[in-house]
Length: 265
Image (cartoon, rainbow, N blue to C red; front, top):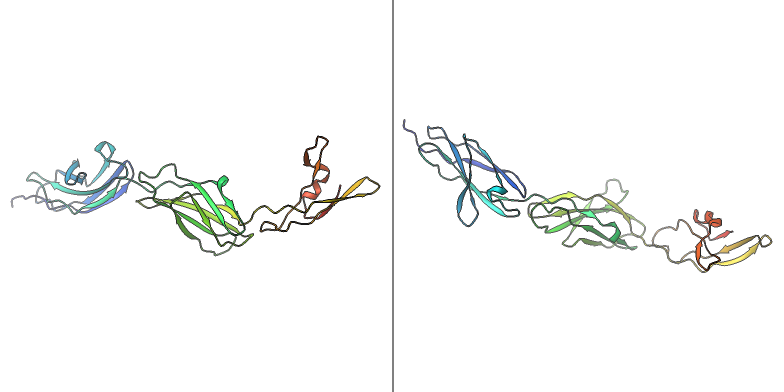
């Protein structure tokens, strides 16, 4: 029986993709009665299909890399044909691939993150590597901290900040961020726990009373009207020094370790 051209390859698949390489594989077709010598991999790079790479010894996988003309972030359509000594098969069905991967994880910018009693504004830095394709948005994941079985939720942001509103004063919330590009969603940043609270208001102006034959001074004050959304844990006592500058009084350090509204120095 005389040999014929091979059938078209089948099951063309994108095995992996990054900004520098795309790996393709396919299933060998009926060879037409003669050994398949190689495959021609074609891409639609400029509006029409042209051969980008050939395999040898009938290999059914190939890596398309930057030296072949691969451009990071660009989308390609691929087809493949088989060859024997009679000629070329018809082209396989096409498969699309983007020369990119998911982006790296963002890094949280804690120094620029702020909180009030009802909202938290989280800030972060863009990933060091976007995967070879521009980042389209970010997923901001959050949940109330220390809640067994609590389910995470996420919102999206196109900026590198996000404000979560409607929070409960004094509660802590866990946040992390993922970057998204045309390929998909990248890995998560580290998780940070932030309390929906601010620093307390100032206590009232203190009053002083001599005690113990002028050996001690009793200092009294009233707790702040607003504790910032969470219990006050301590007070620090400052005393004017001889140079006219206020400094924390080491003799009253004990007052900074417990909640008190008066102390004796």
